[in-house]
Image (tube, rainbow, N blue to C red; front, top):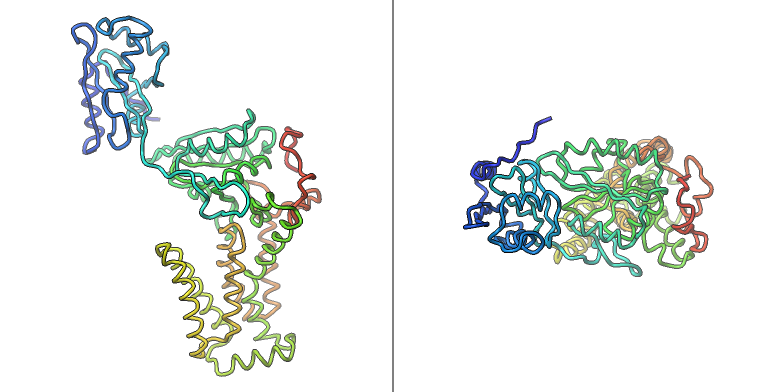
Length: 492
């Protein structure tokens, strides 16, 4: 391990090191000043102008004023010994001064928005946090909108996000641990959990994995997900994301671990189980009978989005005898004269639907939605008129897309999009038998998949009857366990 560089007692040496280390930084500011009898003692303050607000002398005056008020009296009587004694013994201060022990830490503080003061004849420095950069305000979540419920969203400031969680869970057992990556970015990461609720084996496994993150460059919570996930080849997400503090707190109360990263508003929830991807925060703000119905609609939407194109291909190619006669005659009429088989027709239409969806996301917001809607209408109508596809295929692809939008978690919809093509190939090759084979393969994969060591299909496999009531249906509020009951109960 590299030995840290010590701060020199020579002020000029320290200034030369700062100028060499932060050379070619146009926003670097160094302000020299004197104090004490006949102004014979020297010091300098250094900061990055793009990160701090108070700029020059505010903290210098504050540190001298502390000594005048609490220690020596007249400002002209202050000596370097007074400064060292006062701050090394953590004297009463109007401003929160941090004592910096070595040069590397001083540079780190400067780069993170601190004003650092070096004194002549003292091998330590003072750092005052004055970070002031423009930041997004707490607004309504963009990806998790609700009709009823809180409308606060996390932002890119880590401390503010932690505060949004703390204000909702004012419990001393709610623990927040921080770490900083050792790469070029020096990103600050925090993870939180409720002591007594979180499973200790899961927490130990998480801490073991998060140690691998320390030497990586982290810009977003997605980086952490990719580094700590159990199966990197699986199309299914093994962790959940949220921008809603209330969702994060609900997860913590269930024994989950949440991960926050400086610079991003996404909160990572660990572990993420398959059944949880169909739950939305609004489920618990509505009456249980309505929420249960909506949740069932989401589950049905998942199966429609996953299987509908493949079922259409299998029925029209291999199992036409299963289609009612009137409907079969209608399908034959619409497919008459089409040059492509159902499989290629479905692949082309799904591809163009995905293309329109991606274009709608990447385009500026005012025109993105218009392009998606108008583009889908024009291309669909033109494809039917040109006898490239049938009207029924357009309906199938449109229903598939709409069903995927009904799933609350975007990542599980991505898994559907990835698996659509291989499932259509199985359907075009073996018909209904191919669909069953593919579904069996997926089911076997899901039963073997783990999320932070937890079975991905829990509580379905292994079966946990007590937890099944809140899977397909929403458990009535009066049956839900209060967060204050059984604080030491572990997850089943």
